[in-house]
Amino acid sequence: MVDFENARKDFPILEKGMVYLDSAATSQKPASVINAVNEYYKNYNANIHRGIYKISELATEKYVESKKLAAKFINAENYEQIVYVRNATEALNLVALSWGERNIKQGDVILTTKMEHHSNMVPWQLLAIRKGAKLEYVDIKDKAELDMEDLEEKLTHSPKILAFTHVSNVLGTINDAKGITKLAHRAGAKVVVDAAQSVPHMPVDVKEIDCDFMAFSSHKMLGPSGIGVLYAKRNLLEEMEPVLGGGDMIRTVSFEKSTWNDLPWKFEAGTPNIEGAIGFGAAVKYLSEMGMNNIREHEKAITKYAMEKLNGISNVQVYGPTVENTEKRAGVVSFGIRGVHPHDISSIFDEENVAIRSGHHCAMPLVTSVLNEPATSRMSFYLYNNEKDVDAALNAINKVKRIFKIS
Image 1 (tube, rainbow, N blue to C red):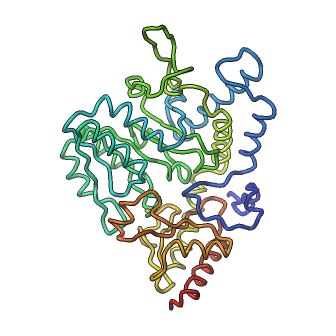
Image 2: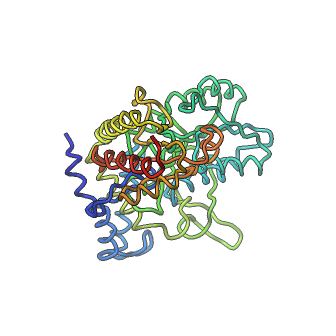
Image 3: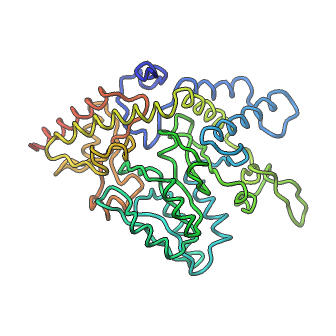
């Protein structure tokens, strides 16, 4: 059994007494991650792949080790399938700009869903405009789950690619990535999974899902910002052309032409975020030691507790799967208080030293067109949260209602 209460002590920022309920936006960092970055700067700060001297070789070793840890974490075949980018957004753009640019033709169908973060929508919109392709969206059923009948109907249009989120950052809905991928492959589509909200919070196995591409970010899983992962099947990476050119991604350069480096380096032009990779490796180690099944069960318990409490408060609307469907919800709870703008809710929460997020959460079509709201407030949980944090949020909700004289 993991002592999650004791694990809170690993996060220096929580010593300030703040209740942090915004991990879907970015997670807090344990001391082991902070120390790993500091150790790099203090003891072996050097560029990688270039220096024939000890600290450069050590930096290279640690950088590659982080890729190996990441590959093992999602059960990839090897670290050569792990391409480092700035974040999940850049990973999704890389697929659109490389694979998409080469394979999408005029009149082709690109399929995504109405549940997506802008990161998994805008790149496909831009690609569709450039190539003269048609972009289609899978509907949402009961404002909570993907409409699987609509998905199957739209797959009959023979899309070249299906891009969908594993977990909605607004609704908390956990999509059946394996089942959806199987349906898409049967229809001849390549599959892109936005796993920014799943890889940090639950076991994710790319072999089991069988997706062609997967994107996720370090900063949402206890690691530094400025580094993310594109996983892809090896044959696809070998076929794809690099998007950025420069140092380290080349094998040979002449005045007339260049040839590309081996995987995954051909997609990583220039000096990378070395300290970010090292910190990311430390984060993956920390999560692996905690156990992703344990983290998932911990978050499920907190989410269920929060949902049950919220359902007992009048004039509070909760979005996404119901409390009876906790198995289908990750640790994300978006809500509204009737008659109060979400920005006012967040401001009052902040007065109570409780950090939540309000807005459209980079999913404007979902919030405004599907939920028919200008914005929502969102609590999101992680391994360092507990029921006392939820209670603090509930007290803040009651304060909002008192201020706005809502029964």
